Amino acid sequence: MAMARPQFGATVRAYIALTKPRIISLLLITTVPAMVVAANGWPGSWLVIVTLIGGTLSAGGANAINCWYDRDIDQVMKRTRSRPLVTGEVEPRHGLAFGISLGAMAFVFLWAATTLAAAILALAALLFYVFIYTIWLKRRTPQNIVIGGAAGAFPPMVGWAAVTGDLSLAPWIMFAIIFMWTPPHFWALALKLKDDYAEAGVPMLPVTHGPAHTRVQILVYSVVLVLVTLTLGPAADLGWVYLGVALASGSAFIWYAWRLFRHPETESPMTLYKYSLLYLGVVFVAMGVDAAV
Image 1: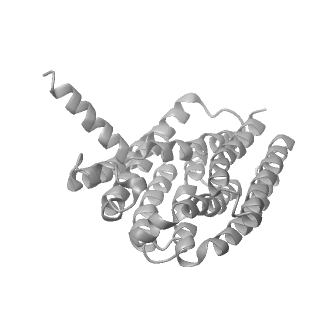
Image 2 (image 1 turned 90 degrees about the vertical axis):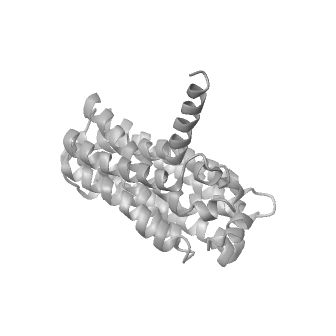
């Protein structure tokens, strides 16, 4: 029994790792503020909790299936060599079954605890991530993250639908914010990991078109991203709290992108990458605070 406990704990940690918890936490940060805006105030703790549980299950299932499908290239890339399906901590068929089970549980749970619309949107995000991004686009086109990144833009719509049962213009703009944020965020990381992607045969933009072209695209998307964030103010009836934060944090985003474009020899792409993580959280928290106060 003394040996069984550590082994059981290691197995549990391996399955949790398949769900990519860090990525899930970022997605969920965008869910709650959308719910607050939809309710024009706090939507209720119980609804928030069950929506986050359902969202976690769905995103975790999608990530586990992604790990199953990508296990061949994961063993080539330094960043992903330690994933459980590569190291053998989890058998491939068990990882796939785990991911499918989480996705199915998420759909049933969200339908029962929130609304059918929220459940359908969460399932759509999973299917889009698995079939459109992972299986179809990722290994075929440098536009993989542009189109496939839409999967990560569903959480605000799931949160909104959990409150209202339907969608309006505002959650679609929230979707667009994340959709436009994903390319500069991910391409900044891809610039750092260019050789890794090239070795694995993944046609990320820095590999197919070069770092210089990628930096231009990062700057263009950054400008469009900030413009999109400003349209949410009137669409969601948000005030100066949100607009001020969106403008200030967005200006900083463009500044980092400009510095990366102008001074690639001294400016690390990881500076923009790290700021982009903070930026998304700040913008969504600001919309929630604005709606609440």
